[in-house]
Each structure stands twice: as structure tokens, then as C-alpha cells.
Image (cartoon, rainbow, N blue to C red; front, side, top):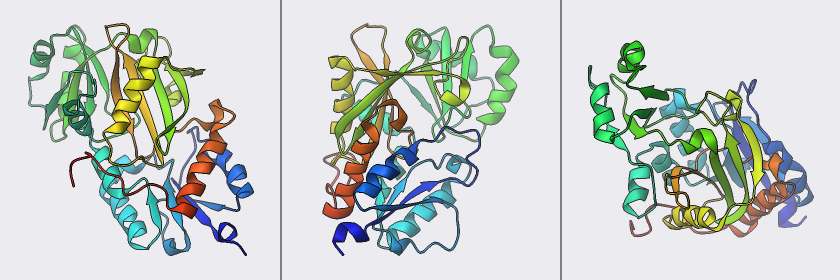
Length: 308
């Protein structure tokens, strides 16, 4: 039996997938055509012999933010088993804390102006508007996913929410940013890459009156052909990495300068890859996984390029 016929891969997911849109299974058929067997396993499932797998791919592990240390311990266990973990564990550790955006800004990647706070002292919210020079502000946790803990604030609606926000961020790191109007008029734009190669893109337009782009909150997803400046900004963000990851999703917003885009997320842990929005995307993902399994893919991933 050839090497390709012995290849086995695991996709990591979560135990309770109800209410989530997951389309990773679209890659199973093209992987099967390449002789690769895939098991879809909850990341916190016990008793798994991870050494059975040539490759373990983190996918829809979208409950990890409630148990981050346990999640990282499981990933370390997988890596120690001899299975190849993708994306690379060190890269994912760096990417779990949104302070990575500060690192990218230092590498000349355009990002939204951001205040980084270790916690939110009582009575400090109002002063953040002045520091950001904005009338509308977004607060997010530095570690988190799925818009959990995100608030959109104005000076007018601040008083009614201040106590709840201060309680949430009293012992939690956070980031504060001016609200970017294009998130409501144009939405987020996501570009998906496999092994550093552009695959497909989409527009995520929030429902009326909302600013959250996740489809679980009712946003509208539309395939998109990226304009040159959009693609070049995404490629600039990826170029800061020492080696292309198996998968990456680059999320951007149009800045107040119409032809400029700001990076809002470089998703390297468990992003939805929206395989259903491009007929060839599942095949491209399968080809990248096959390369990783059989040719071991690119070298060890990391940030920044000159960190070694």
C-alpha cells in the first residue's frame, strides 16, 4: 500500500456543535480521493491516541475560550504525541492574544488605532473616548472569540452599561478602538489562504442595527473578488510570518481613507474557512493538507521573521 493510502488526519471540533455553521466536512470527499482518512474529534475528548494521526488540524473548536489553559494543554499533548499539529502550536499561542495586532502594527501592517489595557478601572470608560478621539467606541477582550465580551459604546449610551462593562473587564485584559463606520455599510472582508496562497474571499455584512459580522448573529455572507489593495494588505500581514501556515483567514475593514484597508484579525487558530462559498475551496484545502501530510509542508511557523 502506498504512503498516501496510509495517511490519516484528524479535524478538531467541539462536543456541542448545535447552533454553529460548520462546513469543514466539505473537504472530506476531496481528501478521500487523495487516500486521506479524516476523523472529526472534539478537542476535549479523552482517550485519543493522537500518535495514530499524521496531521491534526484545529478547526471548529469554538468553545475553547472558556477553557483556554485546558485547550492549550490538549494541543501540547497532541504535539508531544508525534502528530503534526496545524497550525503550529507556538504560532497559535501567539495568535490567541489579540496583542499580536500590536506586533503586526510594529511591522507596518495597517491596523485600527488601539488602546491596550490590562483591566478597566471603575470610572475610566468616559476617558477612553477622549484618548481615542472618537464618539463611538468598540471594546473587546484581548483573549476571546465569537464577539463574546464585545461592546459598541457611545457617550450617550455609556451610563446604562458602565457597571456591567466594568464588572466584565475588572480583571480581564481588553482593547478599545474607535468604531469604523464601514463595518455597517460594507462589512468585514475575509480572505482565506492555504499555505500562503490566496484561495477565496467573502464579504460579511452585519444585519441592520448590529456591528457583529459572525453569521450566528445574522450577518449576510457574499463571495467577493478582492480588489488589489485588499489582497496586498492581506498578503502584507501574512508576510510577517516566518513560514506560511496551513490555513489563515485575514479579516479587514475599509478605513476612512477609501482605498486603504485596516487589518482587524489575522485568524490562525480556528477560523471558519467558508469552504461552502467557493466551489474549489474544499479541493484547495485538501491539496494543502495532502502536502502537509506527505511532503511535511513548509518549515516551522512563527512570528516575527527575525525572532530566531
